[in-house]
Image 1 (cartoon, rainbow, N blue to C red):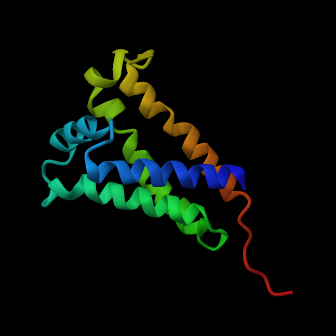
Image 2 (cartoon, rainbow, N blue to C red):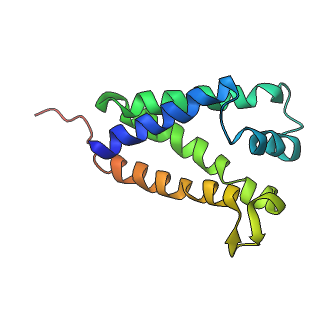
Length: 130
């Protein structure tokens, strides 16, 4: 329960910072959009959509009934957060695949969040009729 609530709080917290321009990830996200999503119509709204998805993931982690939805959204969103490691190597690595920059470390920690979600996912039981 503590792991689930912690993830919920972290996702809500980081998601809420984005619309107010208070997230330290904003510059990196904007660079990623320029490099990897320039072709998507309305890409100027991607950062806001990511914020909404993060807040939803956080809220869904707070309740047992919505855990599956939280994990589903997280498993879609989180791999996208790893893209700068490959699309922006000059920003995320001092030595490629060996020495990450501070931004690279920030991204790599997402592997821990993904792992935590998988652990939590293992606790979700199918509804069965007794």
